[in-house]
Amino acid sequence: MNRYLFTWECGAGLGHLARYRQLIALLLERGHEVMFASRNLEAARTVYGEMPVKLVQAPIHQRQPVDMFKPNSYVDVLINQGFEESDFKSRVQAWSDLFETWRPAVVIADHSPTVLLAQRLHKHTPCIVAGNGFSVPPVQRPFPPFDAQSPVSREDLIQREDNLLNAVVNPVLRELGGEPLEQCQQLFSPHIQWVFGLPRLDHYQCERKQTYLGASPSMGGAAASWPDTPGPRVFLYVKNHPMTLHVLQTLKELRWSTLIYAPTWSEDLRRAAESPSLRLSAEPLDLQSVARGCDLSVSNGGMNSVVELLLQGVPQLLLPLHIEQLMFARAAQTTGAVLALPLKWQKPNRFLHALEAAADPAGALKKAAVEFSENHEADGLTVQVDELVAQLEAVQQANER
Image 1 (tube, rainbow, N blue to C red):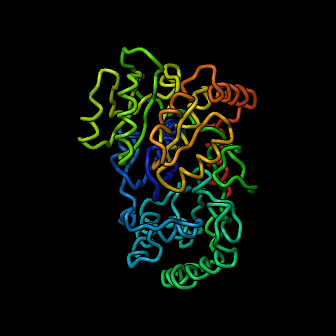
Image 2: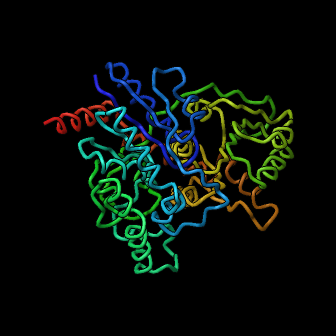
Image 3: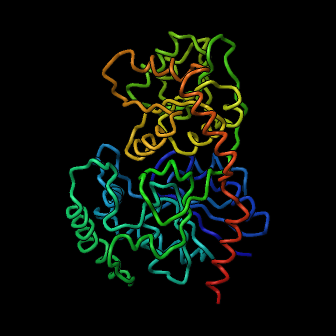
């Protein structure tokens, strides 16, 4: 029997948790113990509450989104996640303490940069860096800019990385007895990397040494149940935002049958969604079931749900909220099956026209979505959970030698 530690430190949504459900189920079936240190315990219980997984609160920085700035590259993600804050050393130490008490055979770190620093204090514990293409960036110096048109120069990006390294990261590592980094990219480069997703939907749209594992296994959930109203069927999965009310109003006026996954909506939005043509669900929905019943999807652009619906030939509208979703939306648009809209569109009817284009069964978006699905079925690039278990066992065995 071995112990495995899964960690999730940054980001939002269920994707960082759900992608490991089948893998963890197989590990448990083989008699191993699993701990998941999650930034969001409520979300972790939603995914793993019925499984014998030890769930603990991840040591995270409590920075509010309003205090964050628009990042230019992954080094700014580190800063937004508190690498320059006064509690940084304490969080590295807290992760180190978790290593010491749980003593995992292998750590699987999903979007967990502070964990990767703590691992340098426990080099005898192997670590796998895991996540999507955003959270496992290409190992290049400097980290590539999020926007290819960014005015920030390569020299400025390198300087920003070196400043963070020399002023904050390495002093903390030295104080705690760890080996300093020569460059920020060494957070990732020593480790095996699991990059979930599809190559043509890479957030960075650039060459990388890492290879993609493929589409994540489906999480499952409740069967989709649609309002009994005429017209196209819409699946809506968007977060609280001032423009969400406009999205709802448009769908109400169209009277299209709309199923809404809204686990965190405010009461005001819930009241606005009271309509015979709209149906709310607070529990996760089986996206395979959703795909079989809907004609189009509208979401903020979470990678897992977008990919799963694309693989079933569903055209989509994306309303990205932050830089990770925006980068993914740009990549998804290259398929021809997706339209990405800014959340503050200038023309009042822009969203309506996009809805109508996506709902057209003979339209370009639907044709591209079907083509995407058929091409993926031919190449078969899907995560093989048994191969991940074999990798974990190989890593552990190599570490014991």
